[in-house]
Amino acid sequence: AQSVTQLDSHVSVSEGTPVLLRCNYSSSYSPSLFWYVQHPNKGLQLLLKYTSAATLVKGINGFEAEFKKSETSFHLTKPSAHMSDAAEYFCVVSYSGGYQKVTFGIGTKLQVIP
Amino acid sequence: EAQVTQNPRYLITVTGKKLTVTCSQNMNHEYMSWYRQDPGLGLRQIYYSMNVEVTDKGDVPEGYKVSRKEKRNFPLILESPSPNQTSLYFCASSMRDRGGGYTFGSGTRLTVV
Image (cartoon, rainbow over all chains, first blue to last red; front, side):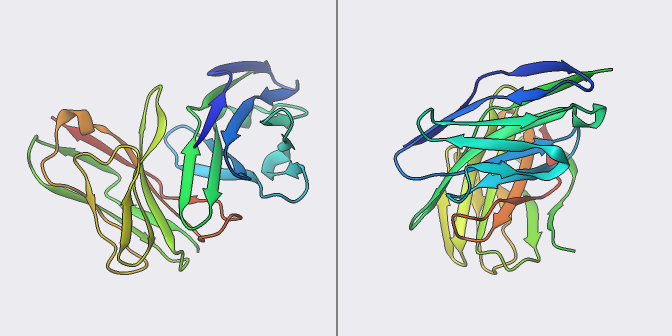
């Protein structure tokens, strides 16, 4: 069984300050982990992915995430928030081994205050 | 351009009137999936397909059907829609391996009255 928990449903930051969106997962197998972003009235776009290579993963638009197996976490960070980062972010865990099981978190809405 | 195309983008229908939402991808992806997105519930998987003629239920399959007769197409069928199927629907595809992230369609907003 696998699950993913996004620890904050809403996060509010000021423009230019750091962003931290928290995600914990559980999986019976070695997982692949992803972060997606959804801007209002848009589809989801892949930000970054972890697939058992480097534990620090860099994505698009200055985002990065660190896979910490001991803490079963995959938190998303960005050093300096921009107004265009305001969106909803989804943490996703997947397992591919004969079948493909993908589980989404319920999302974190990021508000960026000017 | 690599993409997943869903149609229609918006649909209002009445209870019980059969409808189909189409999904097509041009990336030769083996894996395709349908999700519904509802406030406070995130994305929940309806059905998925590992390849042509191979489909399986996701977490919320009741009231939906799918087919995968060709690799590129994965239509979602609501035989008798009900108001609780009012939702935002997304089709997604990926390569069938651990490294593949999804490519999502732009979504279909369905309202059943």
